[in-house]
Image (cartoon, rainbow, N blue to C red; front, side, top):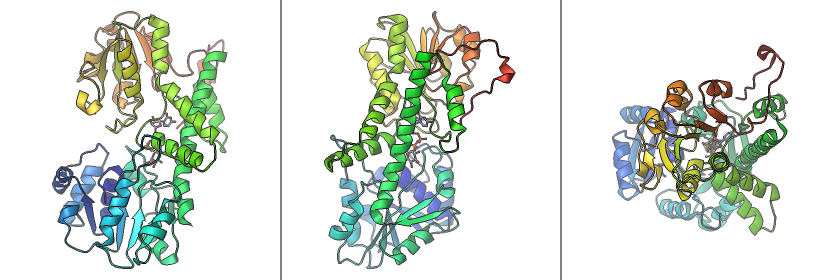
Length: 441
Ligand code: UGA
């Protein structure tokens, strides 16, 4: 139930593994598109897998109102849990889905909660909404990354199942047939908290390395070398340790705020999480401060913003750092042009009409005095930076918000390079081949 990122990936993955899958949504247009194999989101391999399962007949799509049959042995809920104004997760779609399915399943059916719901929600559902229905409930949090969803579906680090009884856990296990991954069974509330704790930890790790990047600029160290050296400790590791303009997307910002809200409303001040949020909000505007420092007033300054989506490989603009930056630049009356390989219209970008959305990098950069890279798309990294530099106006200021470009090469192209935590380090007399280059995968 719910053909968003998670539901679509689940429908594709489950049908590919041989299950008979019925994909449901309340959006008629979306369902009609899916029936034709047209997918509304940018996600590698997803359309192909859906089209292939449509052909084999393992996958069908219907609007909720058109369902006349009884639903299957297992109903997976993947409806949205967007943030409400106070930061709490809005569970109205989940509750509507539960009410709807209650009359369409027989006792013994297992409801699998894939939507990210705050710890305690599952037990509340079990004790109130499903009590004496005979419907079973398991929590199976999802750990898919956008842009890698299908890979992550088939190669997860772990499958977590929060269940109250063995039979339900077994059904949830059977759902993952053919997938080789550690299988962890917990109680329902712990499974829910595993999801939030994972995202909150990763977000905190990003904010932590961003704080270290700020210190690098102050004391004259290189964030690349520092991250590399720190990540060599296997207890720390290098994942989610890339400094930059901060995390965005539909998950980290929402889940971190929801966990903060949950803690607060239960009388616990989760200070560390608060700090992670504060740091992340600050990171988004780093390019603005760098531009103000370089140009003074930004009124009339031509700035090209390269990359709009919250990360490469997706067209998702939810909580994208580029949105906050562009809004701030607009308030400063900068002349903004943008380019993104996927987000290629103002409507898609959710931007105001006065922001120029270009159809190529070169067009966007032509005549600009400054470039800000907000998303590390391969196309942007591999661009002909010499040509870009030549088409710019002085001072050819470049803010690499994802530290994805080679600083020395950019300087060689005549650009005034600024990165995140890359601005203070001075390489002195050591031969470059003796210097371990920083690589954090
Ligand atoms: C995240 C988690 O990584 C998934 O495990 C989880 O399932 C998903 O949320 C979810 O809750 O549904 P996702 O939002 O797709 O996945 O993307 P990530 O690759 O984790 O990146 C999130 C944000 O952090 C992006 O804006 C990215 O640019 C930023 N980031 C990531 C950094 O700034 N530095 C890093 O080192 C890593």
